[in-house]
Length: 231
Figure 1 (cartoon, rainbow, N blue to C red):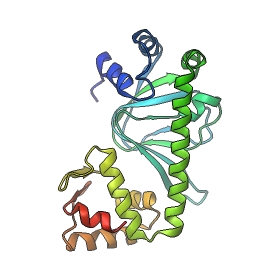
Figure 2 (cartoon, rainbow, N blue to C red):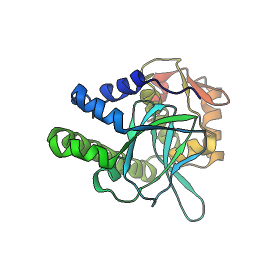
Figure 3 (cartoon, rainbow, N blue to C red):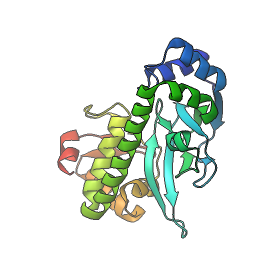
Figure 4 (cartoon, rainbow, N blue to C red):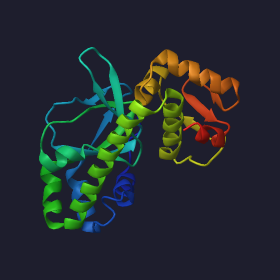
């Protein structure tokens, strides 16, 4: 796995809305005290209930945030792509991790320790407010996800998740754009709240109708408007 350069790390921080207000000296401080960790696909990054104390920025790859029931049923809470951050809750309160984090692809993460970031937060109320905004947005997403499982049928949930994946990959509105999910159909079902068999049946139906084209690890949206109408 190729390591990110110092300039690439700086660009990730400077382009993220949480850090873009920091001065060059503050960015230098974060880079000085941060470190890079690499994870192969399917490897656990941290487990729910484990000690926190750090926030991570995705330099390369994709990470999924999940929760697993005692009987092994997995729910995918969020998917983090390049340039996004996760672990911000424990950065604020220093408590335990609230979910599992697993590398969906080979990943490179920039790790910011709480003890190094807190001195900046203590001086910058604007950054604290941005972090609170992130937490509120995560809470709204979780509430929306619960409502979707309760009130939307599977076809609508799948259509919505596909469009969200397209948007997070920067492809929303690009008809025919390939969305590399790095997901098995079982994992897609975990995101949308459906069994692998039900998800496969719906996707095959869309494929036959010409709405999508299925590959081993990708879905090509051929009729974006039709997928939007299914929500």
